[in-house]
Length: 395
Ligand SMILES: *Cc1c(COP(=O)(O)O)cnc(C)c1O
Image 1 (cartoon, rainbow, N blue to C red):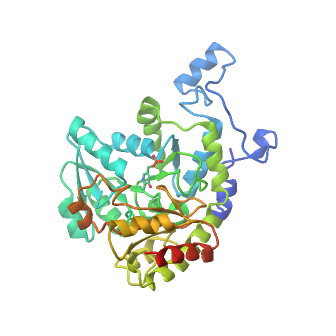
Image 2 (cartoon, rainbow, N blue to C red):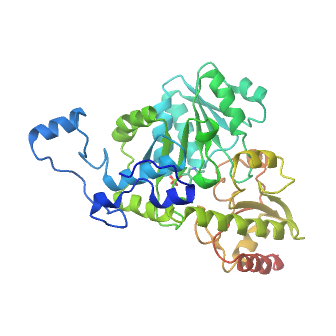
Image 3 (cartoon, helix red, strand yellow):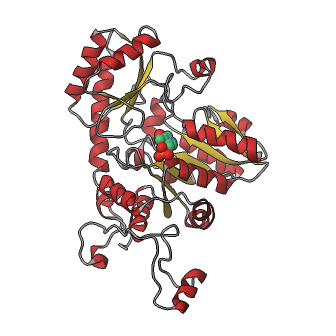
């Protein structure tokens, strides 16, 4: 494997973790499409199992293509070690199960990914691991929400789809005083825009399905943290629950990562343009975007993110049916959940990603029936804007 070099992010996405000399000069990492690895003799097998000798055993426990991805992701997130998983949710569940036992409590930001919410419910009902939500707006609010049995603080920022932010520096300093690890789902920012470990948080999780892959053709997850903790997860919840990534998917992520920096710059530039267009449009009621100077968390964005990101939510004037008609009139923009792809995607949180939340709760969270969430793609912003404009004219 390549040694850890002190290179810029744009260079590390291309090179870190891979040394072509070790792979017969192959410019790109080979795909080690194998379930198991042969030992030269019985004693070698014994030594590999006991840990006396380094080397591969079986692909659920480690695979060379996957290892390259893990080394690269660890470097990109300023972490000591990383693990790749078969989905973002496999990463979330492996980390939360590793950090809790029956009777413990998880304190979450106000708003977490739908399936993370489902997992928290399951952990509460079946294993007596409780959870609560806090907006984490101030130190006092956070301190009040922490319980003696809290063993994990779990944060998403920006929060989907309202684009509210959580101040990671504040949360990590409070958590340090209390000795509680902070886990951040960094999916919306990608490692290019935000590095929670560098701010003092303990574990970063990604749904690599999104910006890390960038091409909408893989379901995968990543967790990054301290070597000791990541090793423990590798040897327990990952190995035994088994949500590992395939070598081919790891290879697709390595391929996607090479363009992460250029893609993110384009996503962000396009989103700035579309924000300006939407916020001046008479048929648009409100727009949620952390790059908006009037956004209540704009200062937090400046402090912890390189740029405001590629996601924007907006409400149209009218009813649920108006929002749906608007979506149906779009020609270029595709109706789909997920985000971070080359294609601009639109979804309707009230009837899609957040439909399981009761209407009153949803509205309290700022998710009205006319709110739409856009994941701005890599197309020319003029074409994205033109598609939005022609559909807005029809409502
Ligand atoms: C998509 C997503 C997940 C889940 O990831 P999968 O790869 O679909 O399992 C978790 N968190 C966030 C913020 C997501 O957007």
